[in-house]
Image 1 (cartoon, rainbow, N blue to C red):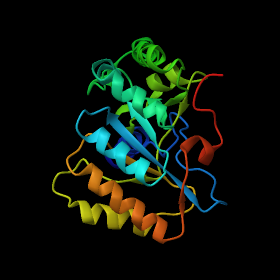
Image 2 (cartoon, rainbow, N blue to C red):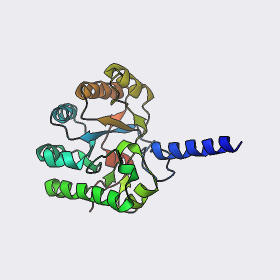
Image 3 (cartoon, rainbow, N blue to C red):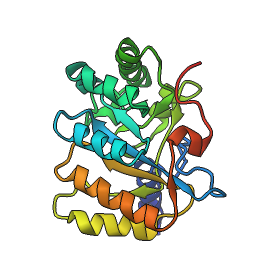
Length: 228
């Protein structure tokens, strides 16, 4: 019996940490206004010199504004892409500087410094400090909560595309997103994966066929994206 209880507790703690929608350790905004027939698109892990421009071209062609959660080290490598993202009216969010696999094991002070460093890099390019933060891999824990609390708005998602899984076909990913899309959804995509541009076109077409608008993230959740 004790083994069952311990196993249950461990599974609960793993779920609480791994699912950004759990809200156990850190309350993250994972959905917007459900009264309006609208959703928001978000992209992680950029900027990417090949795929981000394709994503931006598609968004521009369809007059859609999205949110890009960028990695600080990549921002420093491709500042011109960051400027283009901002200049074309998209939101820039903080996705940490290193996106390290050991990130969840760091001290809260080290986590905060990593996030702050990314904000400083972004400020040098666009002149604004982002408030929107998305933890790497969508993982939260008490250390991340202490680093983020009262400083940033943690942004999660209600629909995960799984577009990082190579064995999934782009068509099947798009079909699942469109099939499950509902008012207020925040969709997680990536702008550093092969076929991400074609996937976006399919997703936009499918969502709009359902009569759902794609709006900027800050409007959907009624929050400021940057420090005022």
